[in-house]
Image: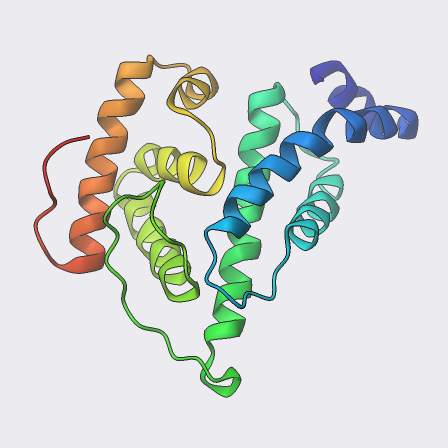
Length: 186
């Protein structure tokens, strides 16, 4: 995949065709996880998220792709932006919405309704200002759907380090979103 990314970056459109065949299934899996967390009556479908993310990814020809994990890390960021923008549009008052703060009990497994997606995005921006790596771990886990071991490989740290930092980030986000003390445990 890294070779195809490099060839595509160099202008080889055939490499892009082969790359699409390799990444489509994984993008579909990530998008399916996101969309399944949305509230009932959602208007963003899995294929919409895949196509929008793919269009943004192919616009990234200037990126020096390091490897597969780097590519999917960028894909996670793009899906986060798409979902956040979509949630903001849906929640806007003129669309019958109105943002409200939602407690985040468990970042990767929590229900990602429009208001919570926007609240999580805003909290992640704040967390990123405090500690960019903690925010990246949450983004990769929550928006990227990556497992701890995949994140560890991407960041070049141990699985235990990712788990520890994820717990720290989750506690920080819990306090930020709910104003309460975080529960114990993993």
